[in-house]
Amino acid sequence: MFTNKKETAKIQLDPENIPNHIAIIMDGNGRWANKRLMPRVAGHKAGMENVKTITKAASRMGVKVLTLYAFSTENWKRPSDEVNFLMQLPVDFFGTFMPELIEENVRVKVMGNIHDLPEKTQKAAQDAMADTAQNTGMILNFALNYGGRDEIQQAVQQIAKDAVSGTIEADSIDDDLISQYLMTGFLGEYADPELLIRTSGEERISNFLLWQIAYSELVFVDEFWPDFTPQVFEKSIFTYQQRHRRFGGLK
Ligand code: FPP
Image 1 (spheres, rainbow, N blue to C red):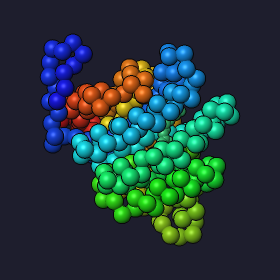
Image 2: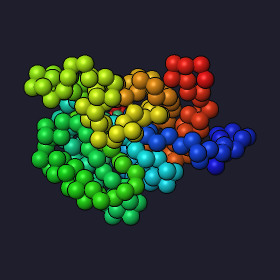
Image 3: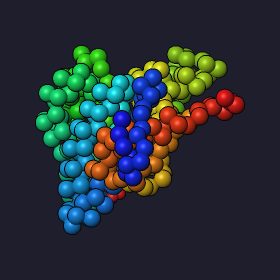
């Protein structure tokens, strides 16, 4: 429960209607830093700290999967200093947050082209996945060197190869099979997020989970990612809970 900005209304979340899978485009780190006359990377550092806060909030709310867009296949176009900083973040994040992840029973997964990342980033990701593999609580799923079109391209290639080799029949290629071949395939029934949030006031998808968000509710909030507090998170979920999801039907 929290009070909105004008302190006029209390918002009560329906605990029975918390999205199982929430995906977030964590945008606005650079602008957050600019506003404070700080270098852009200071925004990314603050953004990393906020990942810890929001991970704990999501886990305690009963979210089953939290997918975070941490680095896209297009982010390599940024200046090398910034890319280098972003590649160090997973090392720092898991280096400082692992005891709490274990305590929270959170399982870490990383999806994307991990093998193209610097050695230290790959190791941090692999170690975090191994160290939390036995955890049974929320899955914290980082999209790292991830792109939605790239993901679909890889899935189509693999499906074509399996069809040619006879592992699958062309006629068996349906929604479910395609979902299984995507990078979120391991999430099974939770592969598609019910809710996608983007921070910083931008209203774009930016090549994130293109297949999986076919019926997701989209919530855009004005706060920059480092300012996205658990209260704003709850408010976003409240917005989701007010929507009437019809999936193309009438009710
Ligand atoms: C977009 O903001 C943000 C990113 C490209 C990086 C997101 C990364 C984090 C929040 C930290 C990730 C943490 C871990 C543990 C991997 P922007 O830089 O595009 O902001 P701007 O639009 O204001 O310039």
